[in-house]
Length: 229
Image (cartoon, rainbow, N blue to C red; front, side):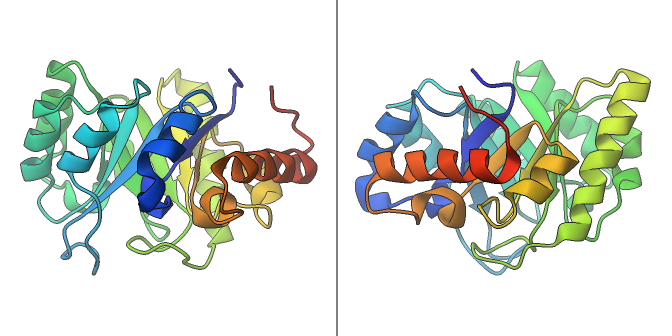
């Protein structure tokens, strides 16, 4: 497996080819990214814990839930019950419950992540930075696919790498938003561990998932100079 990890955002896949696309990607990617939206934190509704259970029937890869919700404790309880591998919560809604939820996730044998909106500084997660397994940096406004790429957010990836190196933190660094040919070079220079790839970077490149995957790899290698295994 490559040191760089790819995690397709299943919200942007062709749902009429659900089994075909996930079955093909099982041997290509490192995990699957599943957005859960409540229509309140963001003005959209998306996938659900039920969807995660359906994916689990055809994939043994780690499943990472990105909670864009107002009441994360409600959703964390549900995701623990179905043993979702990663549960990632927006730091903006965790005031007063962050330690409890992170501990609850870890006690269930699962991994906890925090997510930062483009405007949210890294210091917002300082109280829990040594406790989380993953930090996700949004490079688009949350809630809808196809949002404009916000390059300023990449500075936070660089900052997180520095903090990890200086302090021995163990979190992975993930980026979410417009990971595609146009932006691969800038993102790679910032250096995240995990690239979430959606419609513009993968699923929308071709009607065929096999061709889409080949085009994504070609785009990544051409724009970054990084050879993928």
